[in-house]
Image (tube, rainbow, N blue to C red; front, top):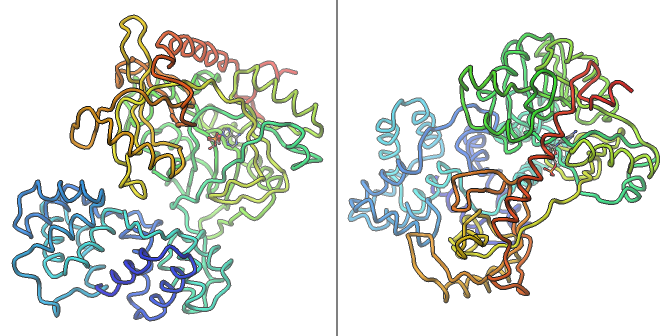
Length: 574
Ligand code: AMP
């Protein structure tokens, strides 16, 4: 394990991708057969493979507590170390480096020992039992190895390794085509297994495994109908851009699970959808959007929001805000688990035909639906479709190339999104914090406010990581350092004079901020050096925008689920 940690450090120390790949390929090639799978998996920064449902259940607090106990230092010591690096693994190493009696190097654990300890931690119940296993593992490690282990457990390796690079290293280590490694990785969701298959020259034998989320295909932005037709023409498909939650539904037998766009499992929040999908006659993976729909009409996002984060929602809430899954793609289908066939490389037109053949709206009325598709073949046709979608108060359109394959995790040109940006708000920065990850040394998290004209004071409305360039962040960090009024732990109250333009998706009523409003998906678009704190937007403007958005959301209610899909009421009767 010491060697694994050393490799990780050497990979972190170089910024050159080719060098990272070379180091990793060499390390993978020299691992013993039973070490390859876990060691490769850990390079993704997680203790178990992505497709593995297990997690160690160890929180950061337990890891920190174990480290301070082992080192015989007060609990606050790790907080101070963490403040210096913003990295739990580094903080653990720093604390353990001060142990009065360093462990015997001969006792240093092997990769197998660590893998066994991770499995034992997962299997143990209760924080105390889990912590005790970790403690006996870390007791045998030098500080650097403990750092590596803590980083894996915290899920934050931070050595600048993307999954693509790991796949490239596997291809290189065992001299296999990269495309074969990538395809096997996507099907299995298990780099450890892929490394073993590559080593044994069995990549072609990789089978699709359900119940690990595939990355979502994303759309590239496009404003201009002419450019879209030029790119996707002669015929493009358009779908309304629904304002719900992107979701991937897996089913096999009566086991149904749903993942969100950030690959978290969210099925528990939507029991009615899970129950409806459980009774059907196919196995596979569908891509779609979760929407709140009552009596066949789509409710505003604000209604759906009441359901978010509510595991096992009470019956009252299920009745108030019923949710449906509107499918727009089929990523894999089959009639029995053994026959589930990946469809990602098939054209959208074929995937859609397979999806429609499932007759979801009939099989699970009101719970599973199909997106409404139209095809357009001219600039005018596309503009009209966009205007109709906007008139229905949708965000815009998704324009899709019927010949395109499904590219997981890519923002390609197979799908284009056509939408009009909402108004932005000019806000003043009132507080800052150091960021995480590659932004850990800089003040990159901004809390911002608008002006409350009633009191003349400022009212906070949101917090966001900056979308500024590294140079701007460095410059602003120096400025904020010099203009800190007060430090409250990691948070600094700063002189309110820097104005930023903030984009967002929706304004919501919320008690989280002093303004009484919050922004959904706030993004800092740019610094407004041309503005001062006196020029920022007012609470009255925010309230007006909020009212307009509410009115818009109500128009969304004019959609209904029909047999052929989710369509605007008027359109369906045309
Ligand atoms: P954006 O979040 O602006 O990048 O837009 C992409 C998102 O639009 C996806 O993640 C989906 O949640 C959402 N979306 C809404 N309707 C559709 C649709 N018909 N096809 C694909 N994505 C859609």
